[in-house]
Image 1 (cartoon, rainbow, N blue to C red):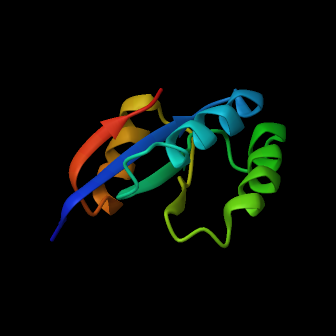
Image 2 (cartoon, rainbow, N blue to C red; image 1 turned 180 degrees about the vertical axis):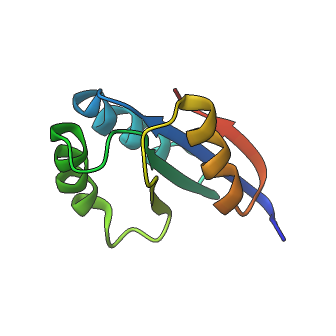
Image 3 (spheres, rainbow, N blue to C red; image 1 turned 120 degrees about the vertical axis):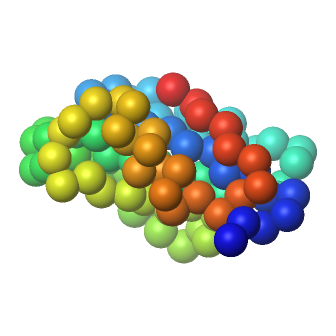
Length: 97
């Protein structure tokens, strides 16, 4: 079931953790406020990029608009997008890669 008017923005992330804060802030600072942001970790579990990502995502732990999805293993960007779609509740879906 989706929420009418809600935009689900899905960001799959792989090895580019340093670029992520700018992308996240871009979504959260839009004038259209009815958004949910879904960040999908597509890194290898426990690698240096995942560890940096966990640390970064702590900054958004109290923001109810932000969801963090952990894949059990690195697959690829398409699979990460699909994982995001599975948890999305928006009427609309947007990808920010």
